[in-house]
Length: 416
Ligand code: FAD
Ligand code: PYC
Image (cartoon, rainbow, N blue to C red; front, side, top):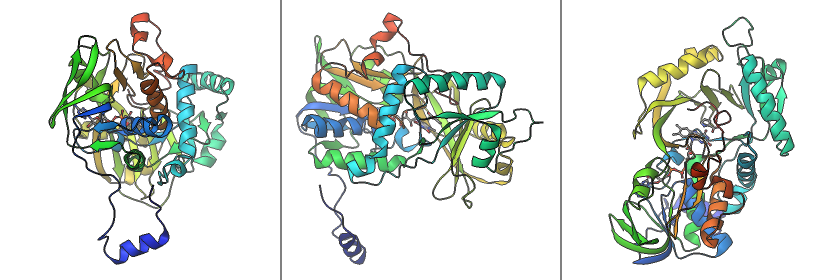
């Protein structure tokens, strides 16, 4: 990998970036690869990176219909946490959070991981009890998180409304001190550069129309840039998973809906933790630019839209304004949406399919940014060795037929 020193930065600045080398190549697709990954979001790119780095599988193409990171990976609100309820989920989300801790060093790329602390507010007695249950489960799994009282919430979040005479008063919170945020684009770019430098071809503007099979085996893909053969095909396309898998004859238990978010005008630092208010369906943090990053629930109907809408903005801000009165004075700057891939149990699907050589990684729904490193790590292992990694094994597609659901409808939090 190329070293980037202060001298090369200065040289490039002084010559107006004339000889600035691209972070990744833009190769023509080859006729055949050992592995084709469909989708250059965080999960697809991380899979390519770990295939090359950990398993020395480098004859790999990542095919992306748009630009890399342009799907949900570049549209999310970057919350990172591992305070899930079920053992299987805690294992994968905590692996991921731990990988985030050293990701910038591993990739030699600043992913701006910011373990600033994350609070899940308790605003009803019911929520307080549910969070205590999660707290106990997390303690058993060795996850560093704890219940805090109202006074500590106020100390950590001075702008919060701590009046007990309001509709949803703050009763306490569940606090993960090393939860936080990262920079979504940088995570995609860092993995892309790392994979590319190890020989992976990342091919943008290349839409996959069809997965090709010969009987029970996968043989390649038909794309907007011609047919590409492959021994293995890994589908990592989030909200677009169902139609692509359908082309291989595999039915997916996924619903696609739009999840929206928005940012305010930039203001001076007012909040240095992430706060999720799950009862009212809202959450907020502050970006390095000073914008308040705000989100709420997913659209209540299936759709493939990637746009924001005024009713969602109004609904989300209205929900949060009692808890954060400051936002009533702010102008909202922009909003957007992403197509999230929801499973019935709100847990992901990672693993093999009944078609030999066809693998799938999807169903991260409203919560997959935090999972990118862990998911890429275990999925690469699954694809390389043609058997589920032990941490991925519970998340197989077969769990829906077997009724082995991993219910995370509460810990998946605000957004559905
Ligand atoms: P994507 O990043 O969507 O990548 C899939 C890629 O596949 C896309 O680039 C797409 O163009 C490509 N593709 C699709 N079809 C084809 C095709 N036929 N051929 C080629 N390429 C194709 N998660 C968190 O953990 N924390 C959060 O705070 C958070 N907030 C969110 C807020 C919003 C508004 C949204 C929308 C999501 C949020 N999420 C959050 C969820 C998170 O963004 C996703 O779970 C995660 O980014 C999914 O990554 P991915 O790589 O699976 O999908
Ligand atoms: O998964 O923590 C999460 C999340 C927060 C907002 C959207 N998703």
